[in-house]
Each structure stands twice: as C-alpha cells, then as structure tokens.
Amino acid sequence: MNQRDQDGTPSWPIGATSTYLTARRTLASAEQDLRDQIERVAAARRNLPPGPLLADYQLTEPDPNGPARPVRLRDLFGRHSTLLVYHLMFAPDATEACPMCSLWIDGFHGVLPHLRRHTAVVVIAKAPPERLHDWARQRGWTGLRTVSSHGTTFNVDLRAEHPDGTQRPVVSVLRTEGDRVRHHYSAAASLPDGGERGLDLLSPVWNILDLLPDGRGDWYAGNDDVPGRT
Image 1 (cartoon, rainbow, N blue to C red):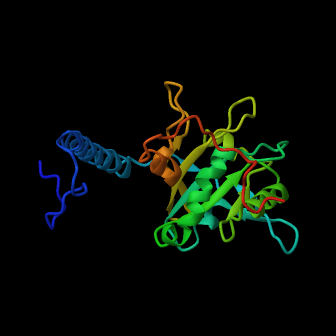
Image 2 (cartoon, rainbow, N blue to C red; image 1 turned 180 degrees about the horizontal axis):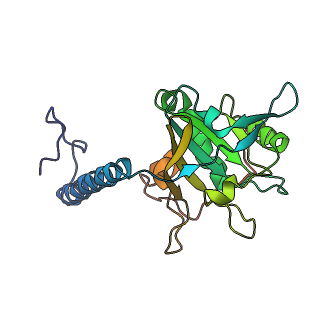
C-alpha cells in the first residue's frame, strides 16, 4: 500500500527511524481500513428504509425578548428537508445540563454555519424554556436554536428518556415527507456493551485527543470550567 499523498509526500518527517517507519506504515494501513469501514457504515445509514412518521409535536421555544412561544416540530426544518436534533440531557428539575452533552453541542456550535448549508439544526431538552435559554447563554451558543420539549412525550417517543424520567444523550436525524415528519436515524452515546463512545465521531474533542500520545486519559467533561459562566 502506498503511504504517500497523491503528490508523493510521505506522512512522516525526514529523519524518522526504520522502527518508526514500520510502525507508522502499519498504522496507516489500519487508518485506511477504518476510513473505508466508516464510509461503508455511513452508506448503510444513508440508505436506511423509511422510519416511522412522527406527531407534529408542539414544543416551546425560548424568546430572549419576551415570553416563550410555541413551535411545531415541522416548523423547525425551515427551508431544509432534514433536521439534526441533539437531545440534550437536561431534566425539568435539573439546574444544569449534562456536561458531556454540552461538550458535543459546543462542537456543533463551532461548525454551525457549515452544517446549516445542508440541514436545520436544533437542540431539544426537557428543561423549561427559560432554563434552557439561560444554559445556552452561559455556554455561548449564540445562533444555535434551542427548544424545550417540556410537557410533551417527544423525548419518550424518540427514546431520549427512560421510563423513570432519566434523560438519554441521543442524536436524531428527521426528514420531511410533505407536511409530515419522518424519523430517519438515531444514535445514543451509550452502547449495548456499557461503553459510552456511541457519539464520539461527532465530537472534535475526542478525535483530537485520540491523536495525542497520552490520549484521553481519565478526563471527563465538567461544567466547572465553561467559558462565559457567571
């Protein structure tokens, strides 16, 4: 296998030892296999058969200039035919949202202009709209649409809430079908084997930490070092 760019430049610096080159070539082959597998999975995801039709839930959108206003699920699509939903773990009685969920949303916020070329994006949480708006302000999510599902069955129906009311970290993709909304895909951070890396490909933080010699270590995102918090 050729471990060089198309212009012939190798993926290692001048002066690398033969031991390093052997290990790096083996790693490069594994990285290409992983890339190919990721694309195969992405193709299977794109080609899923139609999911169930969803109710046109009446949700609540915070308004910084006045009282919260009702908004229908179908209206969240705007000009797009798809809607990316992050189900933020933020229970009605919680004072703070899940720090790990918020980490993922930080990443979405950073690339929001690029995402909006292709899809509508919204963060939906069970917390009351005023509390959700305040959390978004503290995190600096300017321009990112946040909507409350408080008082609805949206979270339960989308499997983003356990029967006991515990919230789940989930990403969903919805699509329009005329005036209706159809589910296309959902994935949760938790995996059947008990792992918590189900959404890691959506976070630049974890992917960059995986490049470093020390990797992720035992670090876990918290809410104590959030820029802009007062």
